[in-house]
Amino acid sequence: MSSNQELIKRFKNLKDNTKLSNYSWFNLGGPAEYLFKPENKQQLIEFLKFNKKEKLKITILGAGSNTLIRDNGIKGVVIKLGTNFSNINLIEKSTLEVGAGTLDRKISNFAHDHGIGNLEFLSCIPGSIGGAVIMNSGCYGDDISKILVSLNVIDTNSCYEKEIKREEIEFYYRGNNLPKDLIITSVKLRGIISSKENIKNKQIEFIERKKKAQPSQVKTCGSTFKNLNDKTKAWQLIKASGCDKFKVGDAVISDKHCNFFVNNGKAKSSDIEQLIKNVRQTVSEKAGVNLELEIKIIGE
Ligand SMILES: Cc1cc2nc3c(=O)[nH]c(=O)nc-3n(C[C@H](O)[C@H](O)[C@H](O)COP(=O)(O)OP(=O)(O)OC[C@H]3O[C@@H](n4cnc5c(N)ncnc54)[C@H](O)[C@@H]3O)c2cc1C
Image (cartoon, rainbow, N blue to C red; front, side, top):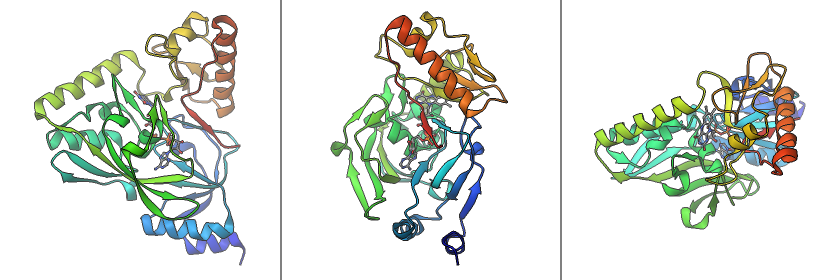
């Protein structure tokens, strides 16, 4: 039996040559050589041990709201922690333990229902909590580093599970110093006891602010580039350099927020990537600044 057949026979929830465009908010990207959606932690560990022999390159995908997948797809195995890793438990008065595939919005709503504040910002981040930890996602002054207690991770090399406490991690703007070979399986978050009314008002305020400033119902992965600092935003540099109307085929820049790049329907991933290059080069020439990507670009 070929190793391909052996893999598929052994792991029923592993598919080969699987379209990935539905797994990115850009709605773009070629196929995964293998796509694996583990049923649970034990199966994930079993797969990783098996892969020690296969040596397939591993790529982790959350909700794909920050990831551009290239047109020729991804070699090796894409591991997607989806609904099987989507659960929320209240473990103390103001502490939650959530599966890494849980959507941020659901966590914020659960926190509201249990009178736990400080998690309101999660209501307007359209990803999973695993992705939010990796990106140190946040908005309006809040971010994951401020509510994180600890992570449960599986090391893809040793295949062991371990807990990493917040104090062991250095977080910075849209990133952290976690090793790249970890799969986050669950996350503990702590808020503060607050009134449901206050929490609801804050969630509504955040969502309204976002609606005013950012496009919705479009195929985008949010901010393409990182801001330089609180005073110099990427969108300001893009606008000042005259790039806000740039386009490549159906890859365009949002009228509402020029750091949001959009697939207008028929773009290819290469069009989005070319648009990124064009903007970056022009901003470098005109403003003397090398914009750093916030979105992740993966694949061939
Ligand atoms: C309309 C829109 C608005 C947005 N607004 C904001 C905002 O206000 N603030 C903000 O910070 N971001 C924002 N984003 C970006 C995005 O939503 C966040 O970065 C989000 O946290 C990404 O989560 P994800 O699950 O979609 O991650 P993905 O895009 O799937 O992955 C992101 C990274 O995390 C890694 N990863 C994902 N899950 C795991 C895991 N379980 N273990 C290990 N690694 C993992 C991936 O390998 C990848 O490197 C916005 C995006 C959109 C589309």
